[in-house]
Length: 412
Image (cartoon, rainbow, N blue to C red; front, side, top):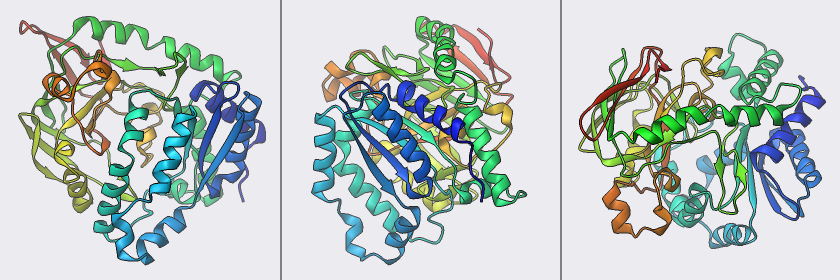
C-alpha cells in the first residue's frame, strides 16, 4: 500500500490552513474529508489548531455509504433535507466558521444509480441550503477547496499504472498543481497571487461589453458581460477583510456574464464529472442568454438534469479564462475533477453567478440584479471548453474589437 511522504503532506496541510482558509486565532474550523483520507484530514485539523483555531470539527464523509444510500434508501428521503442539517450550517456561519473541503471524489461513484434520485435530492438540498451558498459565493466567510486522491480516482486518471503507482503519481500532480511541492509553498502562493494583477487590471479597465469566443472544435459564442462587471482571480477577500484562496489550485480569471446576452454555440473540450456521473461531448446552443439546445455523447441524462434544475440553470453565471500554459494545462492530463480540469482550460458555468463579479451587488434589490444581468439558480456547474487554438475578442461599448487572447494565451 502506497504511503505518501509525511513532510510533504504536512506542508500541504499548512498551506490549506494558512493560505487557503487563512485561519485566525479563536476561529471555528470545519474540515470536510472522506474517511479514505483520514490521515491527511487529521493533519489539516492539527495545522488548524496550530494556527490558533479554537475548535476543529471534522465532517467525515464516505463515498461508499453515499452510494449505498442512493441505491438502497427509501424513495421518499430524496425529496427532503433535514432541518437540523440546515440549522447546523447556520450556527457554524453565525460563529464565523472557516470551511476547508478536501475533495477526493470517485468520478464514477454514482454509475448505475437512478438519476432521478440524484436530481430530486440535489433540488431538496440546494433549496434548503440556498442561504448558506449565498454566503459562501459572496465571500461572507472564508473557505478553501483542495484535493487528495482516492484509489478509484487515481486509477481512472492513470489506468495503465498499478494502484500504488497511480496513487503516487496523482499525489505528485496534485501537489504540483496546487503549488505545494516547493520549499516554501506559502511564499509561492503570495507570488502566484501577485501574478494575476496585470490581467485583472487590463480586463477591469477595458470593461468590454461582450466577448466573442471561438475554437477549432466548434465553439463560436458571443457572451455579453454584466453591467459594471468585475474580473476576479488569484484568491478573494472575505467580508472580514482577510484574504483567502477558495480553490487550490487556481489559475483562472473570471467574471459575470449578462444572463440575457449569450448567443451561439459552445462545445466542451473535456468531460465533466458531476455528482458521480461522467458527461462527455457537451454541446450547447444559446439564444438571448438561454440554452435552447443541448446534447452530450455520454451522460446526456445527467446533463439534462443539470439543465432542468431550474430556469437559471439554462443560463450562464460565469465566464473564466485560463492560459493553455498554466502548470495544470502543461500536465496534459485529464483529471476527471473540476477543481483541476477547470484550471487547465477556460470554462463557463451554468447557473448562479458570483455576487463578487459585479460592483455593489450586496446593495442591490432583486430587480436591480436582474437589470444588470446577474443570474440566479440552485446550481453553479463549470464545464470546460478552452483549447490551444482558442481566440477571445473583446467588444467595447462603441463596437471596437480587440483580440486579447489568442492561441490559448493572453496577448494584451
